[in-house]
Length: 435
Length: 147
Image (spheres, helix red, strand yellow):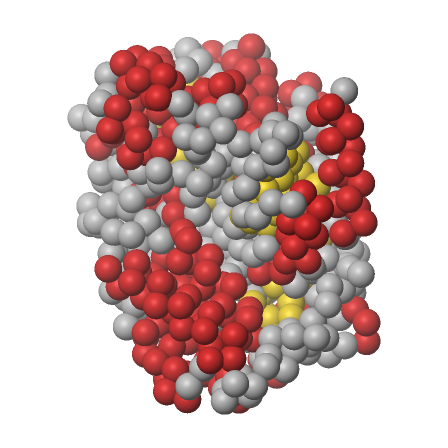
């Protein structure tokens, strides 16, 4: 059970039905459920795509690509069947938002997949949920069954003459499968190794057919856009960054939790007001603003609007919405080590720079943190990361390289403090805040 | 489920996990049968198994304790929880207790970052953990498992 929190600054769109019993289809219908898809059925596919384009909805998985634009790349005519995929393989460290959507509002995801299918002319959709989320798979399977029982899915949906099937699919533990082409490989029953692009999934995707793949949160926003209108949704956020998003606040905060805030909400306010500030009277040391792949921000860099463009301008990324807060008793070298340990574990091993780079980084950082570091290691760590950047087929190499480079660049002094056999200066004081 | 896909092998990943939950591990017999049913070679199946971290060919304990130590959990005592479990259960990472009741694993992010520190026992989430809370949880499973 994921706990719900609230804050007066929240703007509830995606989380509107959280805690309202909307897992049941009848309750979902009472709460305006399946109205958006009926509206979409009466529209031309291009009109649906334009509505989503104009709403400024950008990919909530982390890349921040315009959802409407992505849909428009799917060819109108295709010899092979087209597909819509919901990416529910949520695995980016710091991110726990899709879990809430699946737990509290599974039908909104189904409805989002339906609308996307109508927009691109697909007759089959898949909702891929990571293997660890078994209880959410149970919820989703029940929701899909209910939708079939009502005649919302299957042949001739809502008496429109349009056939649409949506199925659940499950993973079995792999971060890499959250990458779009690796997810398709996994759905085809293979190892989750990414594909070379181009061709992009919109042209050659699942089983070779044109495929739209969107994050669960992106798809859950679509019904709200169809009902409320593109203008309304766009205005909730900042220019080119429409709507709201679920921010997952974690780490050293008094009130961690998943909060739905408008795009462009100030990060400093998010930490000190929404998240309740840093516990134990400690000071802020750093923030990872969008999941473990995003470069760390210093306290003087957090007066920034949390939208894709502003965070990019500040030298990081909005990513997946996972805001991880570090207090001043956290060892950055240890944090960097734990981050790289993750990427080393999750690298699929296909591209050599990623496979070898993450491994060398893990080895070097482990030795370094243990007190056996030498001065040239610091530059070597940066150099190793820099040489992974942009040299892999999928973004996992970049995801490992970018934060590592930022840690070294912004906290070089702290790396130097670990040199000459000195013990980690934080080792004794780094006890858990929960204690 | 097979009818949902244009190719038989597409059902492989979720099927492996369900089979593992049923049997306890992906044994040679399970692999042979699944390969036959999905028209694959056993090597195809083994290649897939070795990729996914939840899949195993060796049986785990009745209760598989998976402690997250990734960044958000680490900041809120995830490593202490893992060490505590190691001591309490007397086993290490990927170890199983002699009575077969518990196995232990240090896992990557399980999607409980805002409710860290967190662990999963089989598929059940346990969140906002402290060593004391973890003790109680393990005791309850022990009681349940020996009844």
